[in-house]
Length: 114
Image (cartoon, rainbow, N blue to C red; front, top):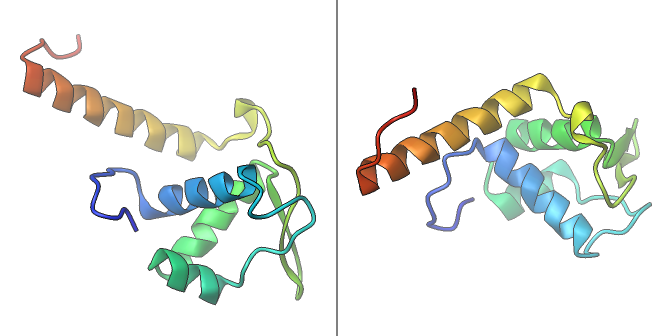
């Protein structure tokens, strides 16, 4: 999924970002149906569960909507304000930033956080 780059974020967050980018770049427009979970699994080389978690993030942001028996459709090009993002997603993002800061501080000899 990461294409050889180091990305400490969970795969489902990386997939959600990839789909969000594709939507933002016009690959999928408002009203378009996203590819099936099977197609997305193949494209991103992840499990169906990971795709489900990624779609869950986009649903929470209200970027996409699921229609029972029909699929997942693009709802908007911009996610809702940060307040709509789940606490779990924010905790994951904070942990990733802390890990990156720790790595940079260790690499460049700066003291750790207080």
